[in-house]
Each structure stands twice: as structure tokens, then as C-alpha cells.
Amino acid sequence: MRKYFYLTLMFLSMQNYLGCLPYLYHVSKGQLEIISNRESIDFLIQSQKYPNWTEKFKLVKHARNFAIQTLGLNPKGGYIYFTKLNRNEVGWHVTACEELSFNSYTWWFPIVGSVPYKGFFDLEMAKQEEEKLIKQGYDTRLRITAGYSTLGWFSDPLFSTQLRLRNDELVALVIHEMAHATIYFKGDSVFNESYATFLEDIGTELFYQTGLYSEEKKILEIRSQAKKENEFIYQEIKKTADELKNLYESNLSRDLKLTKKQEIIEAYRQRILNSKEKLKFLNVEKFAKAKLNNENFNGVLRYNSGKKFFQKILEESNYNFINFHTKLKEFSNLTSEKRSKLLED
Image (cartoon, rainbow, N blue to C red; front, side, top):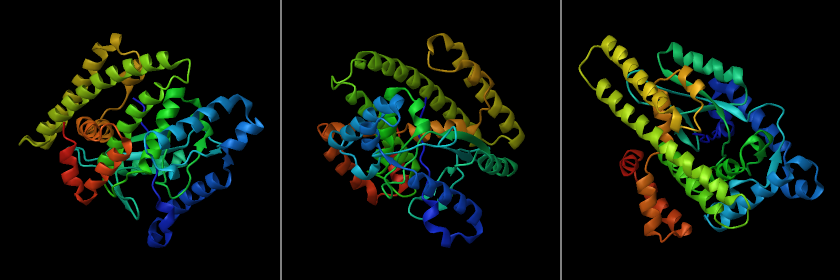
């Protein structure tokens, strides 16, 4: 299940974080390099500067227009520029949560508020951050950042590393990140990410029902199968997370909790491996060897909550996405705790 994460706007407030200057300098420098090296996608299509990527550029341009015109997304969400990177990934991000609870470790920054991830343009810096959190006793994950949004503050470009994505994944990326520039509730990552994931899924499906691409039927079949697999895995993750929560809230000793935690996690792993014959999109070998901890479950739940809630609001909006976004913005006056209740399926 590929999902997309956005970096935050830490570089906008360097004066407020003198103790974090090395990190803030790092992300500021990285973002400025991205902006200064941008090229217009329209120009690149016309000039054929990168002939092997021209069709991808056209696809991204179409996806952006579709996101604005059909899905009602903010035009300031980007994807009118392209930046060729001199590294293999856009970036990397670290997430963490407590060892015996699902309470996320968060970083606070102006504009975006508290966020449960910290992004880097340098892998070694990300590894150092993860190691620091591990030493403090947190469960951690270090993942590739496939894409990110600056929430409309800058026109976010398409990156050369993203051109490796399958066409429908690239369309999904554009929709997901433009969604963040459309609705963003400060400090509420669960709502923000779940909303963007919901819109990414339904928007990509609608995009490939327009009749403009010869491979539409094949892509929809692939996405339908992937959706079924993702739902199966999601339910297993949700079931396991509930088991773990009950364990953590019990009166057992810390040592016994840690032992039973591993038993529950390994039982989850085995259930997935026992179903490997029907899981065509899962890298079974990688999954079998992967480090699994609380943050694996926390991350998935962060991006996949509230499907029934968002579907209900969309139906109440008669599938008019302008109305859909208007209705969602009405929840801005609620606390993140109250919004999280809405997302409980």
C-alpha cells in the first residue's frame, strides 16, 4: 500500500527555532534548491527536452486539470513545474510512537502545528533522528517520502523520482498532494491524511472513467484488485491494533506486555503470510523480514481512517466536490479529538 507523505514548512520560521538551526538550514536549503531548479511542464512538453518523459508530463498536466475542474481542488496545489533531482528519492521521513501505546511522537512547527513525522532531504540525517528516538525507547519507522505538499505556499513541482511510478499511482499522487493544499486542519494529521487518501482513491478511479485513455479498463481492474487486498490487510491491521490497545490498557506488568506485544504482532505477520497466495501486490519476502512495531499500525490507521464518514459527506453533497469541500471545512471549528470521533468506522 503506497501512500504519500508531505514535508512541513519548518524552513519558514527559522528565527523561532535557534536550537534547531542545522535542521532548519537543511530543509530550507533543500526547498530553495527545488524551487530554483524548477522548469515549466508546459515548456518541457513543447520543447521535448526530456522526450522519454513527455507522456508522463502530459498525464500530470491532465491530472492537475482534472483535480481542479472535477474534484474542486486548489489550483495553488502545484504540478505546473518539474524539478530534476540529483538523488534517488524525494526525501525520507521519520515517525515514532510510544512502545506500549499508540500515542504518536510529534514535532510542532508554525503554520502546520503538531505533526507526527519529520522530513529530511538527506538519508543520513533521517537515520540519526530515528536512532535518537530509538534510544529514547520509541517504536520508529523510517520511510521514503514519495511526495509532499507545502499547502499552497509554493507551487509544488513534479519530481524526477516520481516518474518511476505507475501511471495511475502518479495520478493518485497529484490528487493526494493537491488535496492537502485544499483542506488542512492545523495539527490534525489523521483527518488531513485520511481525507487526502479518500480523495486520492475516489479521484483516481473517476479519472480513469473519462474514456480518454486506452488502458483505462486494465488500470481500473488493477486498482480494484489492489483495493480489495488493501482492505483485507487494513482490517487485519485494525484487528491487531485493537488487540494491542487492549493489552496496553491491561494491568499486566511491563515485561509481560512487551512479551505479549511481540506475540500479537507475529501472529498478525503469520496471518498475512498464510494469505500470500491471494496477495499479488504485497512484497511477501520483504514483509516476512520487516521490523514490525506499533508505528507500522499507527501509520496505516493515520492514512485510512473515516472512509465511511467521507463517503457519507460526499453522498450528502450529491457527489458535487465543491459542496463536499465546503461541508468538510465546516468541521474546522471542532477540536482534533472531536474530529477523530467522526472518523471512527
